[in-house]
Length: 272
Length: 257
Image 1 (cartoon, one colour):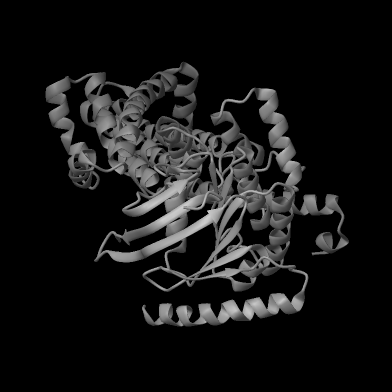
Image 2 (cartoon, rainbow over the protein chains, first blue to last red):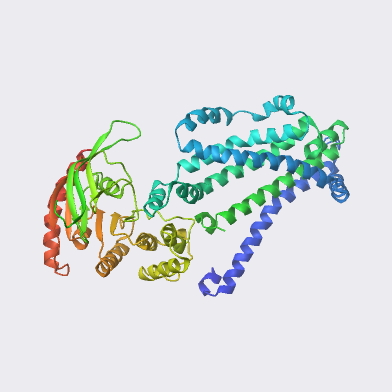
């Protein structure tokens, strides 16, 4: 309060920095508390170390996997499957969603498919894709694309259908042709919605990649966890969980950054 | 038809078809002519179809009955000869103020230097110097509407269609914007159709006021308002005259709902 009433910029900036530091400390506190509870529980022998291995053993395994490069091989494989499937879903899903929003035959054809597909447990198609596309990368990538495409289509449709008609009218009266209205007006106007769809779909893609690896094997983060489970190596399983969480967080953060860059014009960007 | 008219609206009928429910007759047998460089206000209660009539002149809606001609040619689609300003600004939010103003100039294929200098000149005219690179979300309502007007003026339309352009602004900003619009119009007169439900605004700005009836919209009266607007008594008298006409329609419109 004193910093504000003094009117000087420096104390105000310092107060803001302090508040920000406090917020970050609180954010970390939750994670640290969870880890402390974990370590405490296993040290006090409250749970059997096989069910919940001590944290320090898991950390040691993480360090080992990172330094040996094994982590990067597995994470790379999982990311390759997740990102390729996600990219295919985005490249097909966004145009299809926009197409549906324009109405006509596309709407009648695709709307029921999306309505059925969106709430369906997509992973149940894994046996089918294994049958069709084999046991290696292709079936996993198809699985990822299939799991994430419905969200992307639905978001692109809602975003395009919700574009203010006066924007298109303004462009038309300024001399824009239909193709220009589509690429220069409709697409950027729907972009916030489309990006939201992609942001929701990316974790789905990662989850699906890891889940198909756990179900089918074939290394990657999920495959490694499947392997550890088979050898009753609970330290390996928990190390895998932490690795998966870390990769997921990285991907989501990258996506948020990309959104902030693409939508610098958007009112939401002002709320830093 | 008289030769001085730039816009001829002849026996226009329009059915409004809501997504659900029965169609409503929005405009019934509307005829009016707007002269070259005339400032006409379309005044009426909300829902009387005055915006619909403006959109028909703009070419945004298909003409179902009757005819609209601009400079002798029937209106079929929107074009840069008829600039439009909407109530909610409708600026492209991903473009800066300058980017918005440049959009129309890019469409008509001007050389880059020419585009830049014209955009900058307009930014100065509407008083947005220093905000060239701001995005619409960073501007106040009045500034947004200035930017929107500049964007429309950039392609130098002969006709300016204004759809309650100051309706979303606060009272003070509205008065300032009205004065500035009049200044702008006096400096480079254009044919203006100005839709409003504000009697005071219509009397202050327009040379002629077309009072529309409640739905279905018809032209109920045409009132000459070309006089010295500094004469408070005359303004008051005209205001009262038009207000009596509008009041009955406003009441009818309220009962109709």
